[in-house]
Image 1 (cartoon, rainbow, N blue to C red):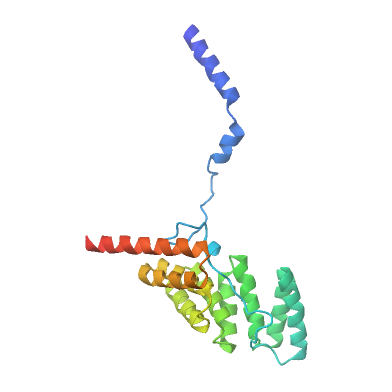
Image 2: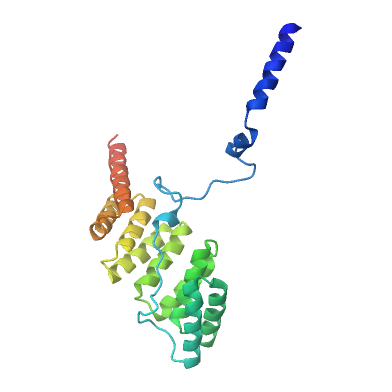
Length: 229
């Protein structure tokens, strides 16, 4: 009986010294899921950490509108877009697209807004594809469409768009990196290695590209070793 009381007293003392609030924070909550990440990815938390999203710069020539009222609407929308006021910008870009269905810029901006939202993949894809109808060689739009397709796990389609975007600007390091990530997802490690080398050559101080290149080379070696068995 005395031994039982001693044990009980020891348990009570230990319980008083445990930080239960800190411990509970370390336990997984019921119903939560890990954040979605890309296949073969180990050096970043999420694909968006590595991908570079682009949009047509406000001063770059693009298929816009010959309608002066639509141009004013776009200018006002661009102000909201710069400030990050996406709801106001979206409303104006939608109106511009309705008034001039051939306005590539309005669709491109809408695609970026939906892409940044991180959930509206179908809307983003539709907007970028509509923009490309009237500006098919625009590398910025091609790159962003590639991002949308990647996030939908449509890696082969993403590669095709990234490849086209790279051809439009061979000096863009981010586009080479995006293409490399899509190759990695398809386990085309040699091609991924080549893309990351090009990205690193263009941006030699970018540590992220160095990490990606090392990862691609490691996976390529491991893949070759597995095939030899």
